[in-house]
Image 1 (cartoon, rainbow, N blue to C red):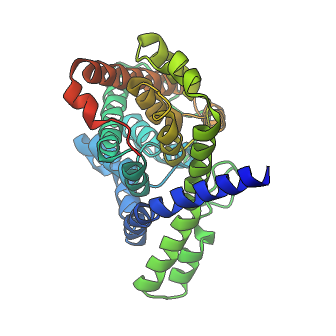
Image 2: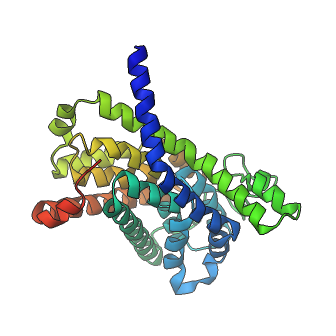
Image 3: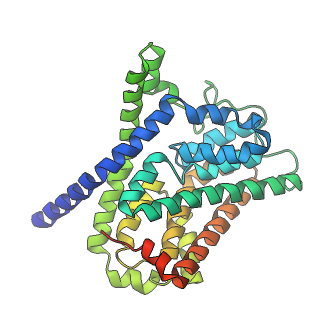
Length: 331
């Protein structure tokens, strides 16, 4: 037992050391965005972007380091303040799928091709969600009394904001330093440290899960059940991913080993997209605050968009060997 634990520790240390440069690069990019509040400025202006609100929401979602649970308070606050549902729902869906640190870590764990595919998938899901929601809104699908079960504007920074929606950004060390008058370099370092703690724990968790999966999950089990990119397997992984509480970093780390064990590429993309977009804790909050047809629309868009991406990707890699080779798993 002691020897096995030692081998596991060495494997985790080796994987962590090699992911470190990509992790620091992603943290640095995220700290730049957070220090100059680029995502917050654009998010607060979504209602004034007009016809470009949906593309703006996609861009904000891509650079925001938020999981599905962290995106819901922002979504509720935006909708209650008058932002149309289409860009708000777009932001809710895209934010958990992509971030600067998520991109760099995926590039190391799965390769640049997978990182770029993940970025494309986030952009596609944003455009798909925004376009579908816009058409439903225009057709009167959501009707009255609107999106939320509660009336009035919800300010996530107000003292009377419900606990599950309240934002604690004012208590963050970096923001306290900024209020005390510290300069931009100090605030940047504080933001970088906060991102290191926030994303580092998920990165380490993902590395541990990847090592455990590689050592203890039989290759025959993966290849026997999910080694084919059939419609049934893609649908199975998509449905299975809905309740999982995994973020984009953990999902990529898990795939790091599962692809090596024989997981087909279509189901792999379904897990990479479907896992971070939805989770039971996030959906429970959304169901409490929003009308049922809004939640149902969100889930249908998540699942149908994931299926479209995964099945199209599986078709391409099965039909064209050159494309398949780009995404070949290699440690």
